[in-house]
Image (cartoon, rainbow, N blue to C red):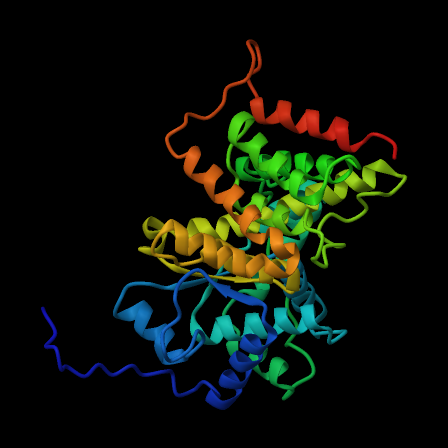
Length: 364
């Protein structure tokens, strides 16, 4: 059946929803600056209930929330404790996001968050938290809305779900690639003989000739290696005398890059045909980096100009040079086969990780 051009489509939101409360929660989420959509939001607004329902029912495009570990952990904790506890921005984001997702029928995709947790804490800890996330994500929209809106001070008693025994501790391949890139960036940052621009250009050249062009890790490094950005938390403990802290900070930064890579993957046409993705992070730095990977430019010159404008505050007069280095390298590797390791090496990414860890773990 084809609809006439002037046909009217009626979208009906469940009248049992406390609409004013849900709209207020959505407005808080937008105002938080924590959400990055992997699509162009409709004119009605990113979290407009009718817009979300239209996309799902008429266009076949459900919306998926991709939260980082800090958000997922707090969702699970609120379900376990029954209260928000300390009403800090990450906890408020987690509570509001869970309430709104249940009200608007938005699926939450927590896999990366639990893989990150398992990589640092092991499968047992990750599976225990997963039990509480599962019960949090069940259909109790009214209870979550009431808690988020201040109409109640706690959720009804909840019991954790069964232990699923999911194997999560083996990180995904994308994280390993991002890990290798962030180790290389960290080693360049520790080299006192290089200028900031030469560090970034050396990183990009290494990706172009010896590795792969990992765009999200490169964009994160664009900020990390810059002279003008507030970048202290990007790689925590980099100059700690306890070098394991530096290595842990690099691993954490690699997870940040992996969330960005998952957002860009879900924003591609082949993924967007199935669902629309919204990234949620209480980390303002990470949320601010995400749009740099989603620049919608008609040609390479426009893309370079837009990227230069975004990073101008970090790089000053060198912004165009830095943007050009990344985009030129991206173009150069389009038709290039992936690099292969020396004879006998079956895990080339693992080899590069080992090389990077050796450099970063040196005493400083």
